[in-house]
Figure 1: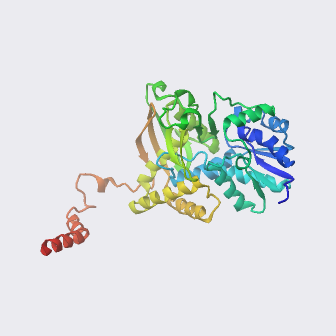
Figure 2: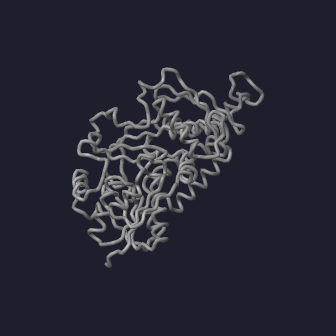
Figure 3: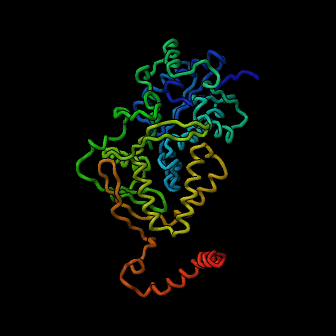
Length: 404
């Protein structure tokens, strides 16, 4: 196989991708194009990123502000779907990878690259998410995954390699957490978290206050939706999806909302332990479920709940650019046609309690649901209803009795 001449690297400036630039040049003798997407990692992670990439050997660096696209075209559909992986995980890393990989492929094709590279390990889910996107968008490009090739076997080895090649990194052998952050969440893995018997230490949390340190008074927040899209907070409408989510992140974080500690089943077959913070996302997902309890009929709601599980697994496993994901999104768009209204949540020291639900499309009828007898519901009809649905049960019981 011919050696690649120009490689587009999915670059974050973290430990792995920082050492991959010199490693690619050393082992392949190629040019390296560093591609980074701003999806809300924060100024601390993005500051000096271009300069660092060039100093470590990148010939070209591309940093794109993708926050609005990420929130409006990836996160809002996720909220609409109700997708949650294994009852807890709000898919913060999973949902971001296809977008980053898409941008990487676009830059690779624009700059004449003949290969793509990423810093995902051979044990993780991200390698699948990146490479399935590559296959969907540029199957002709070669893929280089250093973690599947080099002799580095641990983060300690990676830190040592960085030191030898004078690559500046934030990680040390005493502070070795692996983190992934975007506007939706931050994940924490590694270190003492690798043993699920160890409690998550308080110092790992970065976006949320400890519930014990959260305000002593509850805080109510009202979230407005229009056809499934979040549009307002406390009556204020937002034209920017990013600003709306940042507002909810601040509110949720202040009240200790959105922490989870999860032992999850990775797509590659192993279990892993991670701690995640998703303050604004937790508020949105909770509010949207409350809204749908008003606006969806029983059969549609229950069927959507089944498909939400499939959607979450599909996103987790990296099958974003597939016909199935598009078809599921079309279903969720249909169910969201009446998902307009306002939900008020009460936040208190890490807990969320719904206190008000309003929608012009509400299917809740006080005349029918009230204990006060009304003309719209004749309780005598219940007798025939029970007799019909109970007929198979009755027949089976009679047959069993006569057989004795």
